[in-house]
Length: 432
Image 1 (cartoon, helix red, strand yellow):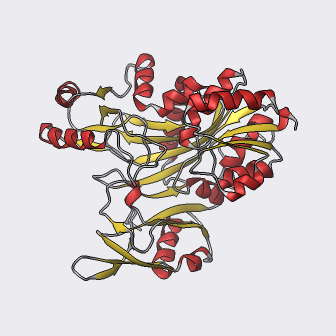
Image 2 (cartoon, rainbow, N blue to C red):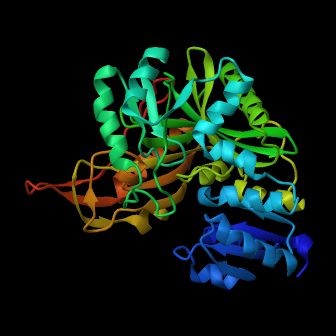
Image 3 (cartoon, rainbow, N blue to C red):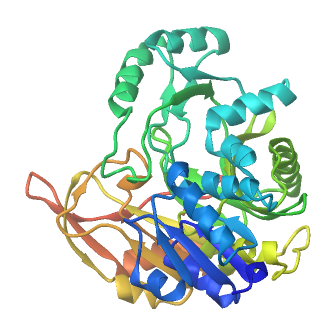
């Protein structure tokens, strides 16, 4: 094995391993015992089964692999592996994104504190340690404000405190979540610490970007359709239907943020709201987005961000132009339902075979309990589709669901109904 052509991947999906192999890389894979698959066993040149979220377990394995066969860089594009990939890069002086930058992005309170030291106008934030902290933060910064975990995903545990009357219920809910691992939270995560931060009113977008030695390229601005009360994401679409001045503001804001946070290389997924004072960073990650957004980027722009994340450290991909141009629109539409129990799931294969469909992911299974939307885990599945433009893609996703996918749900009262496509809008007020 040639170390200069070898990557240490800290946690991966089958797709990630497959793409690394397509690039011609030698793959050293650290994989969690619950995540190993036959395809990974076949494609990885070296597989070490280890809890890759535990640095005490990872460090000796990384040292062993550094000695033999050796590797050029450590990479992760999955949330739980990011910090320890950074630690490996620091340990051996490999460049790439190190632990400190990754920690600022993974720990939302650390990010807020870091930005506050550099930007007087940064969003105010504080740790939530006691019930009284809610009252103090509201008195200091006003209502509403947000309570959320410092390092979770999928909109889990995010609450809007509208006034002092909400504090008791929010505190009780937070205390009930601390230390939990449930079927709605990946076993890779433990909910523990929470923070409070100022609420930003306005439409939400995500920014899919790639950084080339400090040159930040915004590949796509994605519209996010968010539940008005629960913050669950109900749809995505790109390119965002925004006027050029607003797009320019978002690009500038994200580029400045990435500079301040210290990210110089690799993929990033940053969430932004356009509030009264312009674009405001909500949070960011040095990984690809979830919810099939990378598939939307490929469908609309022909750019594979996973390939870039794996290939850029080895010089296997060319730098992108400052403003890639879309040749189509693309959207993700989700299926949701009122509470009940899943009776049957039909039409998935038919949906995947439809024109313009990029991906179909149905998580609902017969026998599953269905809840009203609380966070992203309560969605029943998605369809990603393309169209001539963004609005057409949004409509196409809904058509595919309406015409082909049948998720039958039964209620306690004996009624049976079909799960439906989540309704979305846009900053321009377009309904679909």
